[in-house]
Length: 187
Image 1: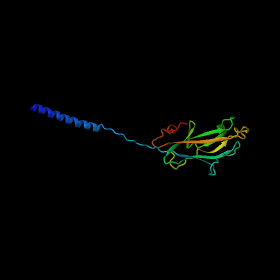
Image 2: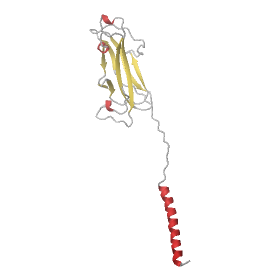
Image 3: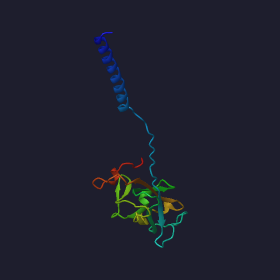
Image 4: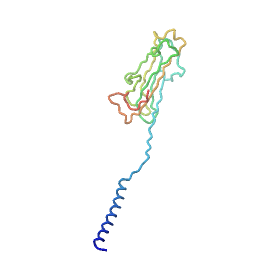
């Protein structure tokens, strides 16, 4: 074997070794892997309180009313979870009669300094921290005397409070628009 041929074999061998090592390093840098990341979101838990001005629970069976009555019903919401949240409340009226819309039968004294109305909801103007209870949404219900007349004798009027909370963490309020927050459930 001649020197030129031997030199050619050595160069080919070096090229082969370099190719082998460079493929290994390319494989190393191009290696990919997967990891399963589990993220668990916290739960929003709240409790609606309905009390009288005497501090007792509002009777679950309701109260007997006559036109013109002002009934004590203090409604607030407590955060019973470990996460702060924003809150909205909807008041749903009902009646066992069709003579008059039930919303015309009630007059509520809404706490407008803490709650703002928009699109059928009252939005609490702040964050409800864990263990805190909001100021009252309202504290009294007036039975509108000139609307509730003899047609309502024996009828049942209902006033239901629905509440929804959405996380406040990483969910900033923009320009005081609590209704524009991310995450509100579909109404």
